[in-house]
Length: 244
Ligand SMILES: *Cc1c(COP(=O)(O)O)cnc(C)c1O
Image (tube, rainbow, N blue to C red; front, top):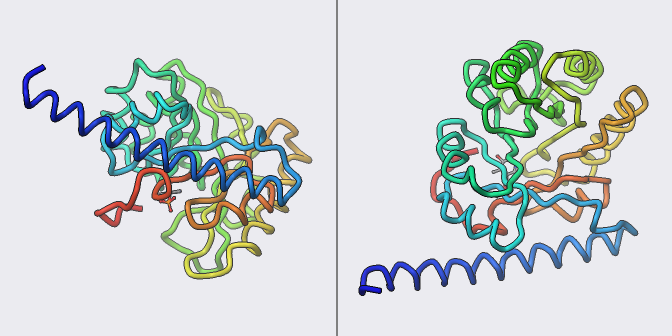
């Protein structure tokens, strides 16, 4: 190996160790939260939210046993997913989604967490059919009053959207997703989400996913029944850009 490539290899190895240590910490937090809630950690799916981080990090995480990755912008996610197409990963799209990006997202995403309006259901269905794929869709629930702009459907709109997803070709209803309100205690919001999820399961028994919990609130999310955690910072470190 020449100097440049051995320096690069050393850099990759240092990053691998850092990600391994972060992953270990997150897994311990999940185990402790599950023990406190009387839940089995096997019921929890950890999604590494890799937005703003390079495909090389996705590759390292896959090597460490991470099977699920999440992204929030199509422009970034599409090329990253293509660069990682050889890895056995499930791709989750977790960000607000413009209708005109649905066709692209349908080509690589396995699960879309942010379905919050009718027009998006039709666009994703058309995209899935065109790509010859099935997309699992979660209804994003808004847990704040007057939360225009941050995405999410009001809880009372969930049944209608869920029914639309369940009957759309190329789509499968997976459950619900929410982001806790900024700067507030996340527990009441996650409890409300659990209630919305229970009502949804009464109609659609297979829609068992509750996507809730990020780096700062995964314990509260687990206590309230979350099945899928979306973890960025605690695994990958701080992001420079304020991309959300
Ligand atoms: C960025 C992002 C996350 C991860 O947030 P962290 O606080 O970095 O863990 C989770 N969910 C969504 C929708 C995101 O955009």
